[in-house]
Image 1 (tube, rainbow, N blue to C red):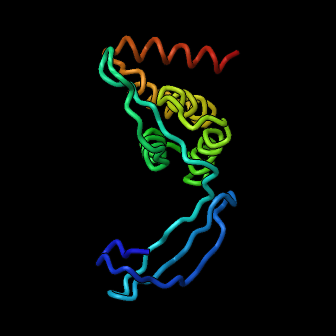
Image 2: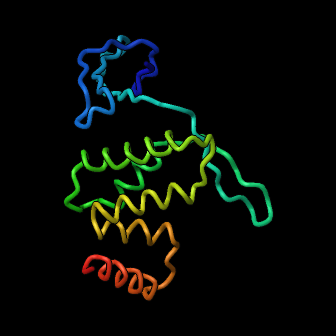
Image 3: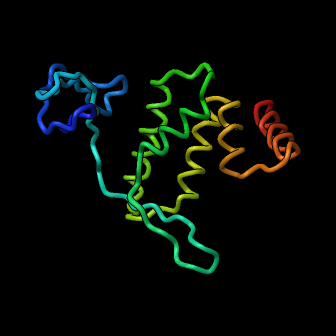
Length: 158
């Protein structure tokens, strides 16, 4: 494993343990070059999933490999300063990744991933849900927030 500090190719595993939800292995490593310590995570990947992103209007969609880190970053940003533990975020992201890998499709539309994230956040935290939706659905005016927030309240009271 390449050191993130000095780019030395060799590191030594000092400690390994399963993650909270047992979907990955957390490894503490020490660089044999500079001695710095860093953490890596090892996860099972059932299949390679390609994401279809909307291209230019009338053009072909773009394809890129699924990147778990993009979902982690988006969910963490939506949950920033909210009472949502990192473990719950990890479980949400792992659940979405497992769903994608078990769909049976080698390609999935980015829209479908966005909807999975929306559904997960809706169940996790209503404020994080609205934050993510504001970017995902491209809210442009305060009225967009008002309408969406009122629909969230209605769902919560049913």
